[in-house]
Length: 144
Image (cartoon, rainbow, N blue to C red; front, side):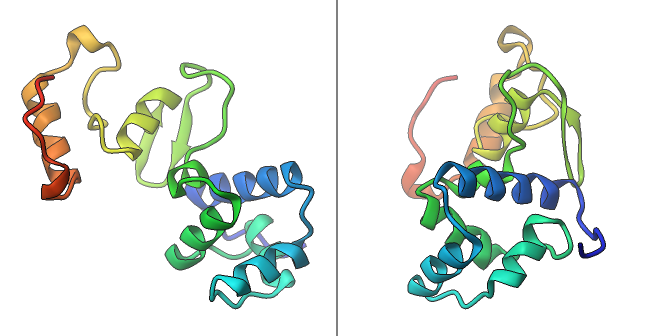
């Protein structure tokens, strides 16, 4: 097994790739072939290293793998849990937080520094965050 060089986000992505590959009953060779059809050249050995944390995934690889599995890239970045509030999850550069909080941040809905409880959140801060995260064509006169 290659030595681990992965940070928390790379580990989350690796675990999600392995989980989805198992769900689809897809071999590393099958995944490499599907990625090649999408214009990404990667060997089964390199995919193995990605899944085991020996190599960090690139952004191009992340989006290509997400497309093969028909999931959002956020689905690969988000640590997989069965509960929105247990256990706290870890991503590189992000404090341990509840899964729901991390997901809301990843999809551009709520900044990390906002409390998880809706009634404690600042609507102006959330709207400013959403405006920074979303392109102008997504902007809409929404009230929090």
